[in-house]
Amino acid sequence: MQLDKIRITDLLVAGIIGINADERFNKQDILVNATLWVDTRPAAASDDISDAVNYRTITKAIIAHIEEGEPMLVERLVAEIADICLADDRVDRVEVTVEKPGALRHARSVGITVMRTRVD
Image (cartoon, rainbow, N blue to C red; front, top):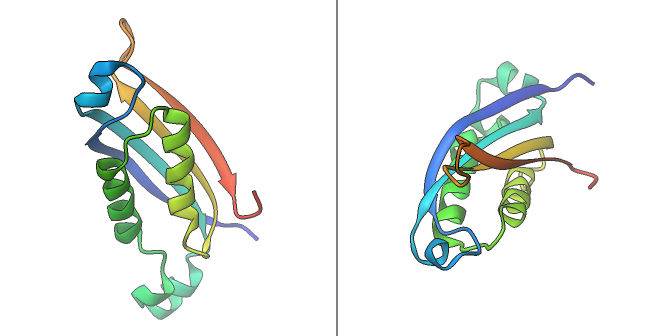
């Protein structure tokens, strides 16, 4: 079955992430992009939010997780965000990118992208 995509683009949240002493103390910008593969046909047919993947709820959960968590590695945070997206059973697959803008000299950003499916 062909699935549709919900995209959360350029979600910028301040949080603690990193292994250096200053990163453990000072919040820094964390940029998140996520694509969720879902079947939007039930929601389109009913025009009822209860039949839809509520991207606002997912986005709020991502923001809260970043603001409350303090992972050392981007690898951990990106995996946790993928799990948040897959918590809704209607999400079949997700691709999440987490970036740390300005983390590397001479680079605008550095980040990690993961793809996870319901069967992973």
